[in-house]
Amino acid sequence: MESVFVADAPAAVDLIPVTPQSLETVLEERPARYRRWVRAMDFAAEAGELLRIADEAGDLEAVLVGHRSDEPLWMLAAAAEGLPGGIYRLDTQGLDAPTLERAAVGWGLGRYRFRRYRTDNKVEDRAARLLWPEGVDRERVVAMVEAIGHTRDLINTAPADLMPGELAAEATRLARAHGGTAKIEEDPQILARDWPCIHAVGRASEHASRVIELSWGPEDAPSLVLVGKGVCFDSGGLNIKPDSAMRQMKKDMGGAATVLGLAGLIMRTGLAVRLTVLIGAVENAVGSRSFRPGDVLTARSGRTIEIDNTDAEGRLVLADLLDRARELEPALVADFATLTGAARVAVGHEIAAFFASDDDWARALEEPAASWDDPVWRLPLHAPYRHMLESDVADVVNASAGGQAGAITAALFLQDFVPADTPWLHFDIMAFNTRARPGRPKGGEALGLRALFGALEKRFGRTG
Ligand code: BES
Ligand code: MN
Ligand code: ZN
Image 1 (tube, rainbow, N blue to C red):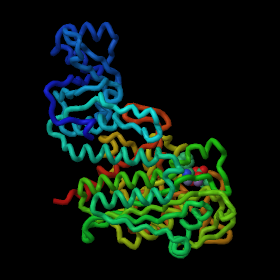
Image 2 (image 1 turned 90 degrees about the vertical axis):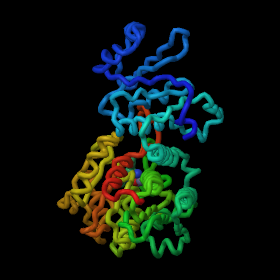
Image 3 (image 1 turned 45 degrees about the vertical axis):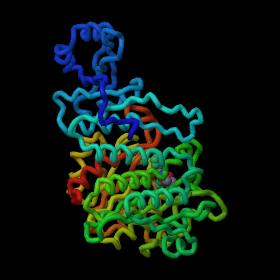
Image 4 (image 1 turned 90 degrees about the horizontal axis):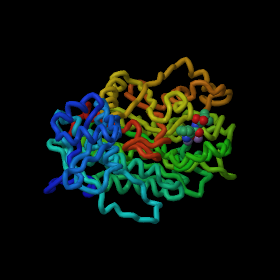
């Protein structure tokens, strides 16, 4: 974060947050030329609107930063993206500590770039930097910004460069950086025996599947299990996707990327939990070794699953992992998965749909989702729809006929692998911005991460 924040500086340009409502009052405290310039430039203080103001010598003196008072997180995002190199100081008048912290995170997110595949290597040596606003928890801000950046980077990486082996290496690196451990299972015979659904989904790929188990924290702390769908590329398998649907499927490991980012944040801020991250890393490929419609798999739990559609692969991967989670006697299991197109139809790309077996956890997401501008929306685990998953030959079928309530039936499928008394959250996410907004460029995105982190922090607290 060296190039994003600075601890002190001899001089800095003022960033003055304004809303359409506060503009007049703010201008009253400034030289008269400010008001004239605002008029001349037709500046209305709309969210994301910036007005640069020169001093009498013609140097940049201040920037009026339009924002919405109910979106503190994005207050400085457009400024971070759009302002020229230099050092800036936020005018913190009238802003409380939580607002300042969110504004600093938004500044960091506004500076996010994914440049791995750019050859023009334009180093941002004249980057815009923010003087740390007084009183913010710098470590927490940096941890949050880097967690989200990590998730975005993983999703944005080309699928050929982030197959199961690379995803496992990422988890190992992350665990080591925080004094945790990562156990990686990749032997195909062991996968076939111990992780039958994960093995079946990934077995046609030349990139061997991996089951990743990251562990961190004192063993006597409450057990928190995060489960991520790590489908490094989803062609659909033999039920192959049409080209337009396949185009985005590098992001089908977005659940894994989200739980890795969240895990980094949890470890770095030292939440008082015993953390386990479970990821099934596979490629759902087409080949003579592909699993088939009509095949019957026996899951890790012993349940038999008839394959109706090889493109409903994510729930198979999660089924084995959720069964492993059970053995860890969790205080909470939370899974993240780019599971269904139906969840996108229901809530669009920019809201994380979630399901909860536990009303308290569902409610606990509300406040952090709002204050961190990380919208989530609960969908029902409507048990009567279980009939859509009935198989003629096995215990359950992996995809329901009829195409109704696809996100719900997927969640009901998963629920059978979670003990009834285990608090469980299931996030069905897009993991991708299909349009750019300040602080949120097109590409990989960490949906639900901030909301869940806020709830976890409140429930479990920090060590020490
Ligand atoms: N990864 C996809 C779901 C997806 C598609 C998420 C687009 C986000 C955006 C998943 O593996 C899938 O293909 N699901 C199928 C399930 C169906 C076959 C029951 C779907 O949603 O169409
Ligand atoms: Mn699929
Ligand atoms: Zn998928």
